[in-house]
Image (cartoon, rainbow, N blue to C red):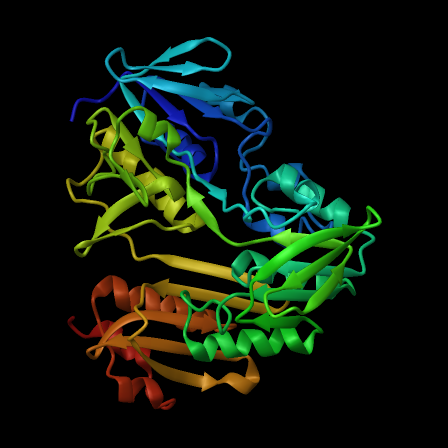
Length: 411
């Protein structure tokens, strides 16, 4: 492809920042404009539910780059600026300031946004969320003196916040509409171990339950009524019910969207002059479309697109083994690969020790490895999947068998 002279990146999160940085690393000589709606410079999100919540990490600690980085690398950083529309014919984006920025190639790294609760509360402005740095600041202030906290949603964000708050002595209750934690994300074995860990620290779970109403009591406390008439009381309520991709700008511009902005194997949208990366992007993988919400995916796609735009790519479509991680008060959860509900689970290690892995198989082919406090297994799983090597289920079960020996064998 022809190397563009001007690249405009809409979205200054992990993916957008990675792309801007990688473009310069690969020798891109042209103009780079990085636009973010938030007033903060690009920052990392994972600490917001952990160290930042606990007060161990400051605002500046989460910034992705040192002060002066963008100036030194001649990257035009526009923060606190909203992009209103894309003029595909003129190859321009219209900013809320009235300014128009021209591009040869436009990249949408618009991320995702929190799902909103249905209109079940008279206190919607006081129900907390966690997506960005400002949300985290409000959550930290609101829970600083709270004794009782209710969290709606037992996903990774809800559990990470629960772990942080329970560690500081709060009474935490989590409402989960499914029958177990992380029902769509991890095996039942890992789910059970995570639940036991949190319950041992005092977290109480309400499974197969939805919130019916949320009402304020005296302007300070909350009354949360569940669909079985159970009533919970709290000083703070957090809604952590997942996210949806931010596709409005792409839709308005007439780009193809589904569960995300649709791209091809080179992360190009239905307009050859526009790409999409990160949480907002739905890319092809083995006959299906994936949209992944992870730091690893954001970084990998930013790096891939930088190589592609500068002519340093290898001509191969984007193909990275997905990895995910979550830290929850002494539990390091690491996942590599993608699974389906019907995949077979083979345990390696002892769940009672909180150090084990689950190797997932589909028709005797390794699809993923879930690890709990077992980093060596995680790294091994990454290498096995990358090399297309699948151990036999019986070898995984045999703790005396050295799975690393498979790495020296042909795939």
